[in-house]
Image (cartoon, rainbow, N blue to C red; front, side, top):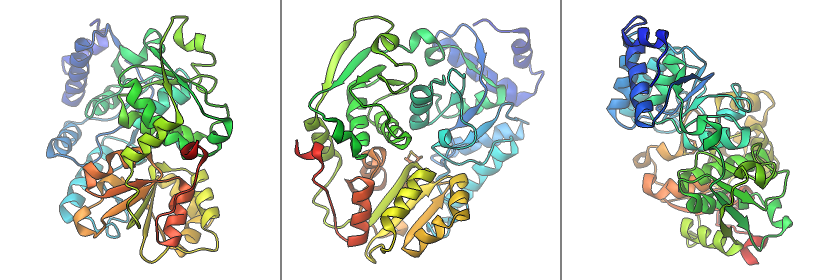
Amino acid sequence: MHLTNQEKSILSGSQGEAARIALQILVDLGEIFGADEMIPVTQVHIDTTIYMVDAGVEFAERMAELGGKFVVPTQLHPSAIDLVRWKELRVDPELLEKSRRIERAYLQMGAMATWTCAPYQQGLIPRFGEQIAWGESNAIAFANSVIGARTNRYADLMDICAGIIGKGPRFGLHLSENRKAEILITLEGFTEEMFTDRAIYPLLGFVFGEIAADRIAALEGIPSGVPIDSLKAFSAAAASSGAVGLFHIIGVTPEAQTLEMCSQGEPLERFEITPAMLRNAEERLSDNKIGRPDLVVLGCPHFSEEEFVLLAQLLRGRQIHESITCWVFTSRKVYSLIETNDILKELQLVGVDVFTDGCPLQYPTKNWSFHSAMSDSGKFVNYCYSQTGLKVVYGSLDECVETAVAGKLYKERALWRTN
Ligand code: F3S
């Protein structure tokens, strides 16, 4: 890889040991992937924030001890816990202590305490064409596809190195020639009316991700005007069922105003998705025999202001059933907005618990007696059983609310479920 004089100097230790280690790791990674040089990135999203193993904590602490400082704006993915309301989540002392160590190390290096998996909906939002280094699958897919920013799928710890150096190796999705569609997926048997039901997007994303796998796929047939939160739900589900770092939706996402534009004129192998495939995905992901879920989980990825407004409307004048716990996860920024306009108070009064910073897949299972959960998130229902042991059922936001209020599972006869 060609290195500048400044990069060679960093490798010789001129900017300290943390910078030397970080750059060496990035160069080694770049050489494996055939990168010819490093490119500057304008911002970083660190995914290595959820406590999994001690190595993650120790690496962050070591880089901080060695004087590592983030040289570009660097934001943080969720912690394993709500760092403020951890008592309400019944977090174990050990997990709290490990999460605090991670928090201290990143803040010492100058990270922003965003603690959100929807960084594209608050503060530091990249622009079209901007070179960035982001970790976290849903955020990567959204940034590349919906915004048109450019990031590879930065692995854990690589994101820290990119923040310390302000650069990433130049390969993969950083380059225009690697962003073209490789396959075309068309929608067959859908009507425009079906897309007014938001519940369709997570399942569509899930099936799309299964077909795309690690290829860049273009999707044709979605009407324009898709709500941004539906694109968020699609990205998260697609990146959970496939290794999706970039997708194109023709007429919707910026690098795919036409098929010609995203395929760069090349013929593409074709696949199709039908309503029956969504029904099949729902059956595979969802246990409809659950008569009453113990827990309703919303905010995977983290809830936006718009989603809170919608939730408050759906719950106005009603009450969460005493047999059901309803959790919503969001960022600190959105939390402060709904605190200011009283939506938070309104939701709390009807029995909703709102958490920041954390991830519902990381809740301390053994400290709660839940057996089953319901969620409007394709990503959550995909991972729920394997990560938490809870049986899970999928439903739209409306269905989650109706279930939470009635105290028993509620499903609608949606058009795509019946046609
Ligand atoms: Fe976010 Fe956790 Fe879902 S990090 S995307 S809430 S699995």
